[in-house]
Amino acid sequence: MKPLSLLRHSFEHGVHPAHHKAQTEDLPIQRVPFVKDYVMPLGQHIGVPSRAVVVAGERVRRGQIIAEPGGFVSTALHSPVTGTIREVGNFRGADGRFAPAIAIEADPFATQQVDAGAAQDWESLSLEKFIEAVQMAGIVGLGGAAFPSHVKLSVPDGVRIRHLLVNGAECEPYLTNDHRLMVERPDALLDGAEIVRQKLGAEETIIGVESNKPDAIEIIRRHIQPGQPVRVVPLKVKYPQGAEKMMIKSVFGKEVPAGQLPRDVEVNVNNVGTIVAIADYFLRGLPLIERVLTVAGPGVTYPANLVVPLGTPVREVVRFCGGLKGESREIIMGGPMMGRPIASLDVPVLKGCSGVLVFTEAETARRKEYPCISCGRCLEACPYFLNPSRLARLSRARMYDAMKAYHVFDCVECGCCTFACPSSIPIVQLIRTAKDDLTHRKEPEE
Image (cartoon, rainbow, N blue to C red):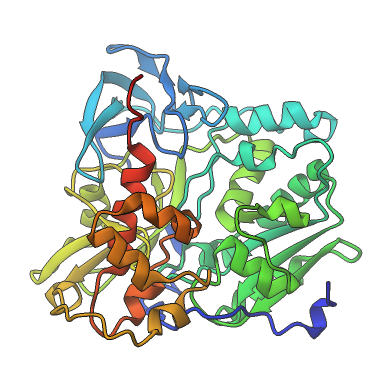
């Protein structure tokens, strides 16, 4: 592995979408007022949905467990407010489908203060107990994927983690929530990183930040104590710099082979928000009941960076930001490259919701699609060196099984191929359809 000073801190391929971060990058984080109704879906993370442990009519406190993990790849769920369980049933989610969730009516007279427990003696916890605590805190990857954090921290026997890599790239356009966390809460970030580093037995912590966030880089560096095994690495601005494998390539100059994980190259990667959430739990006793997100886009009246209780309806978040402009046409949960349109303004904010972006007709009008001209731009853009045009053709022909031979599951759906395509072919959407079919297809009964 080359010394970090000799690396160019970038990766092959990728694209350069406009940043569109000026709307919110200098706006301090605000807190959204509490509202009347909250809905907490049981499947807010990758893996097995949580299992409700409350019933209709039961009174709950803010921060109280309302659902326990449904398996190992699952997390606990906590009430975002003090109030009463209104219903445990099926509710419409962001994708338009109905799924099990817990509806809570907030107590209008409650202070909504968290009965936070005392700071935990995390140093005395075994790795097994530490991982269990992270699971029961409900912490997941807050960069958007919502992968249960305790699973990522569960290192198999014989595997060594030498580097904790904290992902502060935030390469998606418009989003600035991680940026503001790094600027406003550097101590919590460094405390959380030190907790994870020590529990993993890593030699050092490296915080990767794209160079378009010079204030965050400077503030974090200023808060690093002498002798602390932490360094900040400025990264070249390119999408998808925040993808795990791309960041490892940029920081260490090392490829993570197809089918392998960062731990196979002795690295553990966690998002900035996730690390801060770990610090909040172990040092303040605060489980994951709220998150920071960015509200931005041409269609919102007052863009903002907000702390929002989980389960808050998107409608209330947008209302706090002055409401929608008349020409608004689409709302995306997440970033514009990997986020997805929501089915209704009444869907709740989830653990993996890093942004609420409001777009007008100008941004959402579908361009006319033309035949593929075999220009190869999607191949040049794909950071995973796949053949997106071939995968798209196979998907159109519904030859989903054949796509496995072309490594369709190595695709992270970053959208670089669609962004680069001059024929306006919805390549990533076609690949997503195939992956969804292959993932959820039921095996024929014998």
